[in-house]
Image 1 (tube, rainbow, N blue to C red):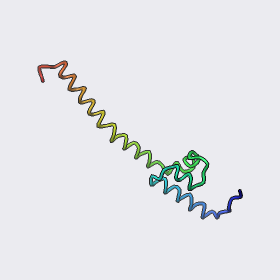
Image 2: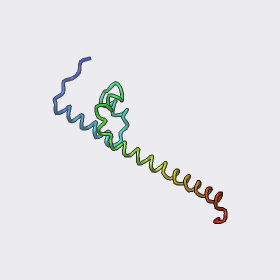
Image 3: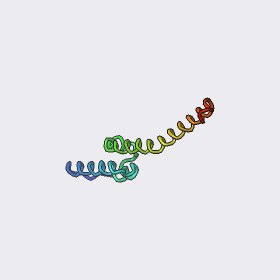
Image 4: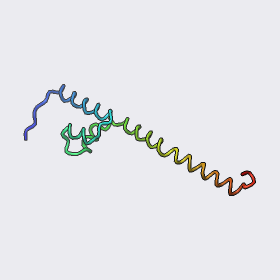
Length: 90
């Protein structure tokens, strides 16, 4: 199948569009299909720079989910420690 020749401006515009989609949390598989790439890894290799916000979002989500559990577990362990070793204080 022969590819259509595109002008450089169209190619740049298309690349910007795909980058914007990824920056705005469009799933990689969706962008992959829009780009016509055979694999999502090709899309990530080319446009991965646009996904740095996703990494920050993932880190923030992990912080929100894990931090309360860690703090809660720490407090529980601290209470057990004091009750066990300093029963007079309780």
